[in-house]
Amino acid sequence: MTTIVVETRIAAPIELCFDLARDVEAHLKTSSSTGERAIGGKTSGLLDLGDIVTFEGVHFGIRQRLTSKIVEFDRPSRFVDEMVKGSFASLRHVHEFVVDGGSVLMRDTITWRSPLGFLGTIADKLFVEGHMRSFMVKKQSELKEYAERTTSGAG
Image 1 (cartoon, one colour):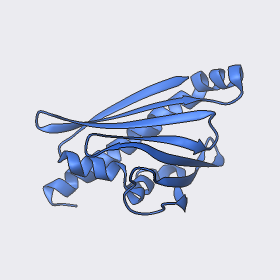
Image 2 (cartoon, one colour; image 1 turned 135 degrees about the vertical axis):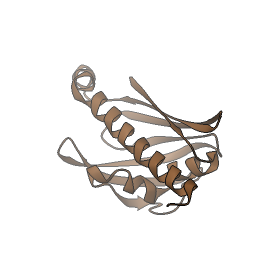
Image 3 (cartoon, rainbow, N blue to C red; image 1 turned 90 degrees about the vertical axis):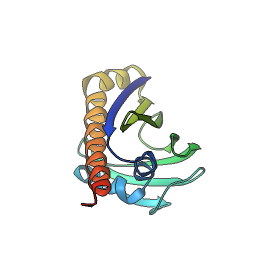
């Protein structure tokens, strides 16, 4: 199993940060570099407990699909999605939000197991882990920008 943790501070209300993180359209906008599309399940609006969504995007030059289900939900502090179908052997994504001083700490913890046993473990270390981290850093940066712009009235 491989785990990455990515954190970003956002100067916006916790409810806004939480809702943007579970908004299908916001996910698509912050994943534009991979050509993400919502193609199944709940394809618009805010995801809630029990919702399933399938995203399709290009990662490593290959068009891939990932179907996830929201398995835990505690607005506005935490929600968890787990892969029910996709390229990984397993994937769990914990989204956490904590008010800290005058900002919100947004933390994404992603744990996955690649297929192919030992070969998958090697692939994780060589390129999957770096790709996942850079993908999440970019997503968080864009979500932060949108949340802060919205809060300042410029969005």
